[in-house]
Length: 259
Ligand SMILES: Nc1ncnc2c1ncn2[C@@H]1O[C@H](COP(=O)(O)OP(=O)(O)OP(=O)(O)O)[C@@H](O)[C@H]1O
Ligand SMILES: [Mg+2]
Image 1 (cartoon, rainbow, N blue to C red):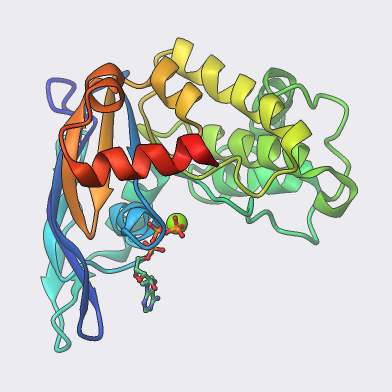
Image 2 (image 1 turned 30 degrees about the vertical axis):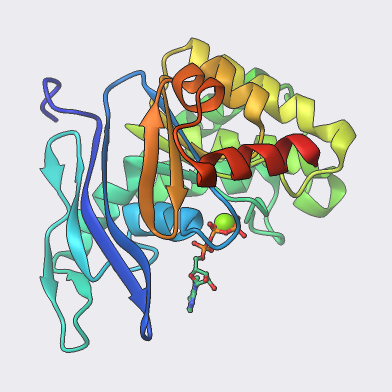
């Protein structure tokens, strides 16, 4: 990996579903240690953008570059970009740790097995090494005593912290968070925010879709307002939130304040 390059470059990503253009040319960069938060109303394309970054969705055009290396693609018959090299895609995805709104843990596996799956099968770590690391990560997210539990035996906040530990176990170049606290009961939000704040303090590079404006203001190096598939405004949290430069942004921020 070339350390002079941005940790992540998202270049002119377009994505359509049927005739609907959901992303209409989105570009941004995150340098090592940056926290880029993405806000925008429901349906503006935030999740689709995150899913295009790790190719859970295939963009129609554009390029994703992680640590200076582009995900190699070609156009298929339908006009979507498809990865040409499955092994490279696996490696590139390993550099992009994804944390989903609904945790997406494997329900029939223990916490420990959820965390060591990637390190053992993709990074080829020994089980012993992977387990040691997993225990350290569980300790970090405040769940050192939960390794033998199944996800159904945990609260939502605990499941999300396991999901964060699982993503960290791959030592990703960039962490992608899609509304990590929005499926949680209000009293469980803060335990997840505490972990995310700690990752920001450690200078983890993160891209975070969120409605938690206080958190976004506190930890973001850049805030992006996505509107109808385009970056409408970007800047420091203060620039974007304190001096909204358009009616659409004012309206969006006003809706959040009213909520
Ligand atoms: N697999 C799909 N097939 C068809 N349309 C889709 C698909 N995924 C998303 N869309 C559409 O793309 C648009 C953007 O969806 P997306 O989930 O990215 O929005 P979002 O900004 O994450 O919204 P929310 O805040 O509600 O999570 C929506 O109109 C949605 O209906
Ligand atoms: Mg979404």
